[in-house]
Image 1 (cartoon, one colour):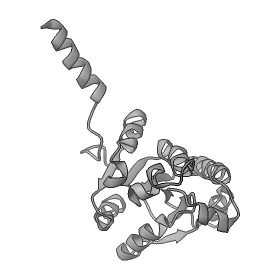
Image 2 (cartoon, one colour; image 1 turned 135 degrees about the horizontal axis):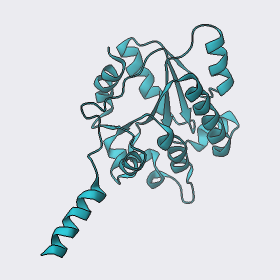
Image 3 (cartoon, helix red, strand yellow; image 1 turned 90 degrees about the vertical axis):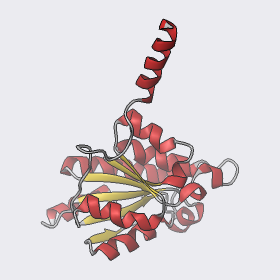
Length: 199
C-alpha cells in the first residue's frame, strides 16, 4: 500500500502543473510586432492575416536580423515584441539561398538582441503536423531543428493543437516553464492574439 501511494505521488510530481495560460501566468506583449520565420515556411502568412484582422501594427520580415532590430531601436521607433514562426521549408530556404544552419544562427542572434531590448518573444507553430518531421521527406529534420532553436527560448508558445499531438511542445513548455497556448483551428488565433496584445 505504501509503495502504491509513493508511486501515485511520484506520478503527480512528474506530471507537474498543467501547461497553459492559467490565471497569473498569462503573457502579454506590446506592438509594434516584428513577424519573422525560422525556416522560411509559409506559416508567417497565417499570422499576418490575423494581425491585420486585429489592426495590430507589425512588420513582416522573413529574414529579420539582430542589426535590423538595433536600427529600429536607434530610429526611436523600436519593436515591442517578436513573433517567430517555427517550421522549415526546403523550397523557401532554397529560394532565399540559405540553409537551416544559417536560419538558426540568425534566429539565435535575433533572440539575443530581443533579450537585450527587453522584448517578448512568441514562438508560433501554426501549420500542424504537415510542418513537422512526420510530414517531411526521409532524412529531413529541418522542421524539428527550427522548433529546437525557437521554442525553448520563447516567452510564450502559441501552437496549433494538431501540431502538438505528440506532446513535443508540451514537453518543451514544461521543461522550460514556458506558458503554452494551443488552438484547435488557426481562426482561434484571433482571440488568443487579442488577449496577448490587449485588443
